[in-house]
Length: 383
Image 1 (tube, one colour):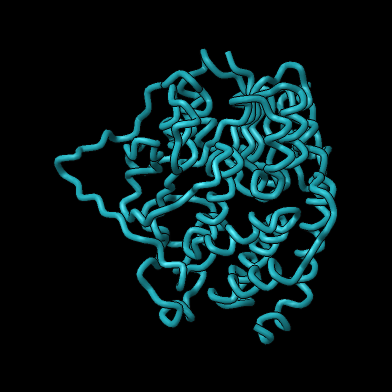
Image 2 (tube, helix red, strand yellow):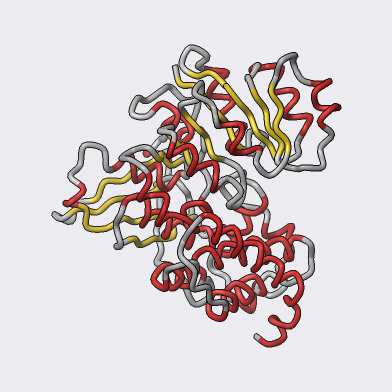
């Protein structure tokens, strides 16, 4: 039985994880849960799964109120260290890192150092800290939950890594594929949050619309699979989730109807496969299409490659700038196209020469976010 800590248990991926545990109680046991501030969800989940500990990252939460609402003897952690505290137990051997942003960076590294398996649903952690994380991790200690990277992992099973010629990610194209920058200048948050295929959180949905999501995934794939040759194609149906091309020019692809249930199941049960409730594919009644990327109107993947090649803390700058820019867009303080302008400005103009450490990554995040909060209007006018 795998003993789970779920970081971000109230989010989209966390919800999928808890559904898997409900379905397979003989295989998984929830030992701890952590949320940012969704207290009612945490209380409900705690009574259902009876974890030994819960955490809340928001330090403004009332400890006494929470204690009154939770099952007796539940350990409670509140504040910035809650993510690490909820996994720091010998009773936990498997950590689902599904919290947003780089908040779980310390917890992921702690889990790795303690020998726990990490099921990673968080792109930003590997994009910002992949260099130090992958050096610390053993083979298959980090299992991806992202549908694209889960697909790659599945394609590589029993294959010789030396025979891999290229990794090919697929991208739905988001809500606006085929549109020009001129057609996107008046895009509203409501429009950007209407993804054609996937039901996801707000940040990742906007990233999908801008194609930043694919930029993050390119860097994530480079770190996870230690391969530099990572491409992507536009595949609007989101049926083929990624492909691997081998030395003989043959390609293995992983395909399924778009649902996060399969990658969540695969990460939790790896290398075993469990039954899912996802509708099977009917190839006789579908049409699949693939298109070349458009990096003129959607330049984020190109910027991500630049950030990766520049190295150091530049990917962390990009992650922090994008998080803040998306917040500003959702708050209707900037336009849709301004997201790229802000991130590109930060990536090309903000330089940090410090070594890649967890502390330095977190410092960069705070510095960049504060910088954009104060000066975003000046940057947009300058751009």
